[in-house]
Structure formats: structure tokens, C-alpha cells
Length: 530
Image (cartoon, rainbow, N blue to C red):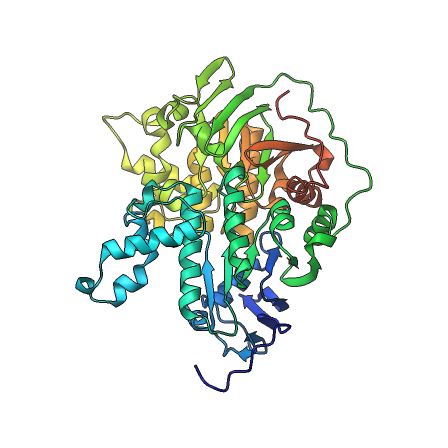
């Protein structure tokens, strides 16, 4: 390191970000963002989806180049911008992203020392010695992880702990004597059970006890109040506040995140229209979900939402049998299905359709034509199996393309040549012709441009108008407010509250989503089943 490095100053911030900006297609993702992280502190970073948290982390990690005019200083040393991928490693900054960056087919010790294994001659390394090093390292943090185990066999919390310990090891190898490093944890907890989060927090506390700093990115106010010393809140690409956690109530955090004061009086949910439920989901457990019950009626569009990891987006797949639930029952009219035995072919036969969030990989076959994809649901009902008419299939698809404004209207094109918005419109058209009874949607307008978005939302409303019941899982509060008659808010695998009728507003949905995680603001849960 250059000898011109400034001397250590205990009161000097470890990290200083000043005026960082970033735009995508004219849309501001970061707007002159400034914040500091002190030595030895856990600093929270909070905000809604689209607030700028992920963009800021990606700028620091070298995935995005910021615009001119910003400044970054680490331990008193100016850092040239833009940062190359991995460029902050030499400044003692390590990242643990949500996907953890582990290789499941390798062992724990191979993942832990992957850089060393790649950099040295294999014949000069002793795996037995590396395994002993790993055991000693885990023991120093009070972790019981077997270094010889394949990562695929670890529990979710063990994988998260392994990724963090590996990042701390990188810090120790790269940091200078003037500071102990900065660990950036980008949403490390959403998919962990509540009990496992405490193990993670214990590791974070042991890291800061050595003098290192941690930036903790999260949606969960409850977690932020437990583990952080200070927190910075982003809203609409800007920093709106940096607050001492111990002096800030859960209600205040919610106000800063959603951008408005909470109502003095909690809204009281209206009665659902007094008509017998056509569809009942009873005591569904699977994945993150535990004991979820929901009642809905034909022609209704019911929204499902919550924070990342709350389980709302798992419900459509469990109801479709992909994967099967651990337990639960589905009453569809006079038919009853046990959800631990239901599979997708049975679901389709019962009139249940799923339009998944990963439309290209899970909702269609990209290498086949638009015609082949769109006509799959009606091959056995509209056409004779022994006499398929290509001309009739193409004509039907062309009419659907026209009705749903799918561009270009060329049924012979490969499905994966369509834009994201046109792929989504094609999937909606594909399943609408099957006259489904229950439609399951996961993020139906994700990655869809504003023009196609309106077409998709109108098609969903049309589906409901024809007699189908719709369950729509979405993190887009605007979208839910525009099409839903009810919205169920999930937290930690359960329905925490329900909004009905005029309560279904973007601001109210946000309040309940963020309020359900904090001890101070806890909307009254009505229970979803009636």
C-alpha cells in the first residue's frame, strides 16, 4: 500500500458516499445519494422496492457505473469511480449478495477457500490442513458446520453463515491495519426462518466486536431495529433520513419508508360481500407458509403481497402443485383436493391455471413458435388429436394476437423472439381461451412496458368478468390497487391483515406491509377465511 495513506482517525467515518447518482433510460435510480458508515457499527439500509437500495449496492460492487459528480471515500482514501467489479476488495470491503455466491456441488471447505484453490497449484495444498483451518474458523464463531459436507446439503441458515464467514475471511486478508473492514450484507434474511435469523445476528455482532463495520440491507423493520446502530432510509431514489435506531420507533420507520404519516385511526375493514365463497383454501402449509386459509368468490381478483421472504409469492405455486404443499385442502366448487397430492396436470384438469413470474423458462417453450405455445391448452378440446390442422391453429393464434395486441402478429415466430411484454400478453391469451375457474398469477406485469401493462391488466379483469376467480401475487402496490377487490398482506408465512374495497390503496398496502414487521405498528389481522 502507498505510504501516503492518511493516518487512522477513530472518529473518521469508515465509508463516505457523497452525491452518487444513477439513471436508467432517463429514470432516476439514485439521486445524489449521500451517507456515512462509522467504524464498528451496523448500519441499516431501508426502503421500498425501487427506492434505490439495490442500485446503490450494485454501484459499490462494480456492476453499475455511477454518473459524474459523485464521490466515494474509504478510510480517508478517495476511491476512483467507476469501480471495477470486485474493485473494493483491495479497500477492505466484502459483499454477501442475496444469492450468496456459493457453488452447491462443492464442499464447504472448497467454497470457503475457493480463491486460494484457484490461485495456487493444487499439489501444494493440503485439503486436510484446509479442513482443520475451516473447523477452527467455524469454532471461533461458535458455528457447527462440517467442512467436508457438500453445500447443497446445508440448511439455508448454514449457507448464509458460510457466505458471511467467507466474506469476513476475505476482509482479514485484504484490510490494512487502520481498519478492520466493511461487510455489506444485501438482504441476507428473507428466506430464513425466524429462529435462524438470531444465529445470523449473533455472527454479525461477533464481527463488529472485532472492530469491523457492517452495512445491513433489509426490508424488515423489526430486524433493523434489533441489529443496527443507525439506519439510512431511501425513498424514490433519494436519502430521506439517517436515524439512530434506538431512538426511532417502528411507526417512524414506516412513515419514512412510505412517505406519509400513518392515519391516526386505523382503517376498519369492510365486510366481504355476503355471498358464499366459491373457492376455499384451508390450512395450507408448504415452503414458508404455515396454516394459511383464504376464501374467494368467482369474478373477484384477490391480491397477495408482503415483503421479500414473507411467502406471498409461494401461494400460487403450491395451489398448482408445483411443488406440492405439505398439507392443506382446496375446495373448488363441489370438488375437494388435498394439496399434498395435487400435481399440475390434475390442477389444469380442474380448471386451475398458473401464469408464473419466470414466463420464458416456466410458462412457455421459447424455442417453439407462438402458435405451438398458445394452442397447447386447447389441443385436446378444440382439435381432433388425429387431425390437427396447422392452418386452423395458426388462424386461431393470429386472432388472439390481434385481440391482445401481441406484436408482431406473426404466429410463426419463435416465442423467445417476442419482447417481455408481448410474451406476457401471449401467456394471458393462451390461458384465457381455456375458460379457467381459478387463475393464479405471479408478478403479471414484471418487466412489462407501460403500454403492454395496461393490456395485461385489462385481460386479467376480463378473465374475472367471465367468471373466474383470480389470485394475483405481486410486489407492485399500484398494480394491486388498480385491479383488486381485496388484498391479503403476508408476514413470516402467514396472512397478517386484509384490505377490502376502498382500503385497497397503494399507500395503505405499503403501510400494512411495512407495519406488519414492526412491533409498534401492527394492523389488526382480520383472518382471510370467511
